[in-house]
Image 1 (cartoon, rainbow, N blue to C red):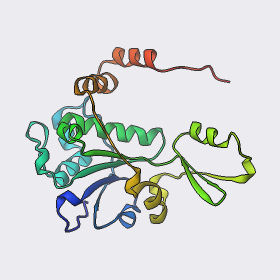
Image 2: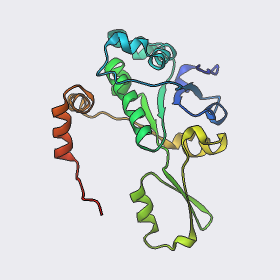
Image 3: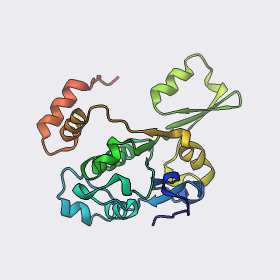
Image 4: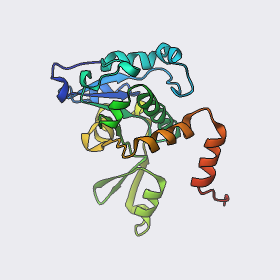
Length: 219
């Protein structure tokens, strides 16, 4: 359920979260929490009827309050920003990707007008000389460790958002400095890319991977 404060919509953000600590971690003055408890589906590969029957999407549509599909009116949104949060792993990225596809397909002005954000959550947290550092990929951590002794750095892999307590969740995810706006500079190219990667055409998806992904042999 959505937990609203009494602020005007321009001051409020709707945060989509799977973590049970989200309510305690939020800033009640500016953040309303929508709990994602079920499974989201691929809106590009599903009929409109099936999308509307999906409980998670149904709840999102009702909470935002600005319509759906051709009837969506970004000016009627109950919130200024919609913030996607998810774990910093493959499953988390998949959930974020599916939510992005849904918003792009059925609430596109929300995306093109800069109302959609992703809360970046670190994969690793390091403590070095009493200072905390966040690393969002293994490569970032490796680069940081190049000129340091392993014994001098305390590294912990982040738990899933659902396992973090309210204090940690607020620090690594709900702080607004971790919000990154999803920007679309070319609507046509973005639409074509989403269609290729998330649509029904398997060949287009394969071609994109073969042409854009570097595959390395296992060591």
